[in-house]
Image (cartoon, rainbow, N blue to C red):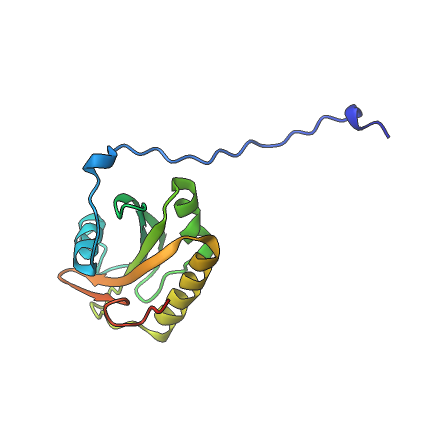
Length: 155
């Protein structure tokens, strides 16, 4: 068989991160309170008590914010989170770390067993991919719960 006889049409895939903010103008994060302020500014105030959303904050090695990505939106009591979609933006942007966040439309910030399991799974996956999960926040307007501050993430 002559290999040169057939031409294969293969789609091109582009991996792209287009920062629109100069590195010197990006906010830095150092604790859960600062991170919460960045996340809550991005949350739609009309949706925070209506639908559950899951977002990530992309962080570089200098602890500067590269961007925020909404991973998924759900209903009143849940959102599906695909681990591949959590780490794809981190890999594309060259992030060294991420912070996870989601809201509970009920206004309750206590993590569920499912929240804890998902966090542990994503921490493990992040270790494999060399993208550290720095924290996971459950947010509402005016309140948050930090997995790190409450010793629910262990390295």
